[in-house]
Structure formats: C-alpha cells, structure tokens
Image 1 (tube, rainbow, N blue to C red):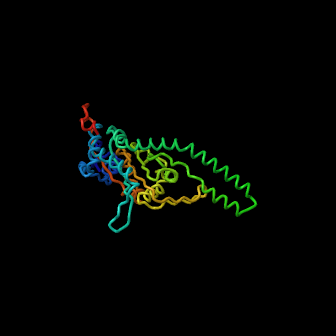
Image 2: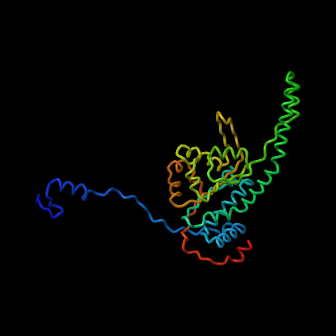
Image 3: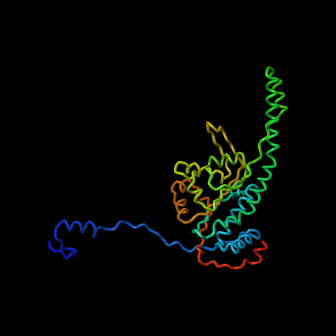
Length: 314
C-alpha cells in the first residue's frame, strides 16, 4: 500500500489508518426510518352535524377563530355526553350499544383548544351548576333522614334484641336506608379506572372524560405503565355498554350496569403521538374507538375583528 498522508482513499500512513477509514467512513449506513409526508387534512363534514350542531360549531369557529374541525369535534363530543344516557343504537346484527363516543383532537399549542372546549361545554357546565345547587339543597334533608333512620334502627335492635321475629318485623317496617344524593359531577379530566368506577356508583350514570389538556389523562395515573392495560380494558367495556364488575377484598364487590361514558381528549401532536403509538393500547383495541381530527395549524392567521351578529345572537 502506498504510504502517504494526503488523506485520500487508498493511501494511508499505516494499515491501522486504512482500517479506521474503512470502519468509520466507508461503513455502510444502517436502514433509515421511513416517514411519509402527512397529507393535508380533509375538511370536516360540518354540514352533516344537522341544523343544531352545525350552527353551534360555526358560531364557535367565528367567535374563537379556531379551526372549524376542532369546533365541530368539540360540539359533537358535548352532544354525545348530553344524549348518551337517553338512547342506544341498534347494530345491523341486532345488538344494542350506547351512543357514547370517544374523540381525540390533535392541535398545536396556541390553537385555542381550551377556549373551544369551554364554549362547547357551556351547557354542560350550566347543568353541573344546577346539580350542585340541587345537591346542596337535598343534603340537609338526607342527613336528617339518615340520623333518624340510624336512631330508630338502634332503638329496634335494643328493644327487640331477645326476639328475632319481632326484630325482623320492626326492621322490615323501618325499610332500607335512603341513598345519598348523587355526586353532582358530569365530567372529569384524569380519572383512574378505580376512581371512575366509584364515581359511577355514587354519582351520575352518564359521565364524560373531557380534557382540553389531554396530557392530564394520557400522562395521568390511569395511563401509567402498571395501570394502562386495565384502564384501557375497563374504559372499552364502558364504551361497549357492558357490565362493570370489580371484586376487591377492601371494597367488596361492585356491579354496575347501564352506565354511559364519553370522552374527548385535546392534545398537542407529540402527546397525541405518544398515545396513538402505544403498542399496549393498539393491541388492546382502545385506540380504534376514537374519532380523530388533526386540523391544519392556524396560528398567525387570526386577526382582531368583530364577531358576526348571528354569532352574538346564538
């Protein structure tokens, strides 16, 4: 070999230099990951939302100046939460399923996800406020009734302690303890499966997992490495309208039927990618239950302007 120091292939000061060149310069590249360009999103079929939801979506779009697809998605998710407790859908093969829906909206920071979500959920928040007022009004009466019931039961057990038949007769006449008022909560952002199950047992039978910051749910305890599989399975059962059954030594046995849960997560692309590429969630089947939109970015295209009079009227 020609010993030279000109640094070109085929001429090296030493054999070691030739080997180093071959190892570090001529070494074949490994395979590169394949990435396809993401095509521009198709327009959201907002006209398919009907004569109530379409005007609502367009009004939010006009007021917030967020992508129309995001506005339509938020309106549709709010509507699913509002109606899911009132009807089922009959499938072609005869079985019935809830009309609950799961939604995922992907948008960059600054696309006004929280503002859109707040507008779409305004009727839900108003209903929650009504439920809280009702709960506050009912609690004193419930507590008084519980105290009276406890006192009478204690009295019966003392008075008839030596007479089983008389005790049973008196307790039958007393009747069962009245349940407490339902917890006045319609949405939550980051429940664990266990927490969601308890809430469905003592709260409203129709709930929504709504997070304008989807990282709360995706990065929350319910989606941690040790919990995500059972969370995904349990949430999928709720989507299907199946019985929720839990048997625990501490909490005992819980069986819940005819419960409804919808979901809307709004997340930035990196967070959504973490969620959508999770092999555990892919294999379990949770992700296939989501309706997903990822509108084009609109930052830098919004300007201060007056809201259309029709929007103000709505």
